[in-house]
Image (cartoon, rainbow, N blue to C red):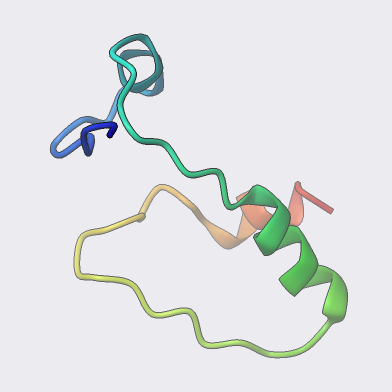
Length: 59
């Protein structure tokens, strides 16, 4: 079983050390494509680097 990348923020480090990584890009794309309004909650101080502008670039 792969270990969780607790405290790791470097993608290359996560991959090189064979830590758990779950890619949700396809799910985000499908949410955007459906064109509905969604409330996406997140834990405090988690995922702040993903801005709405970044999501628009996926379209």
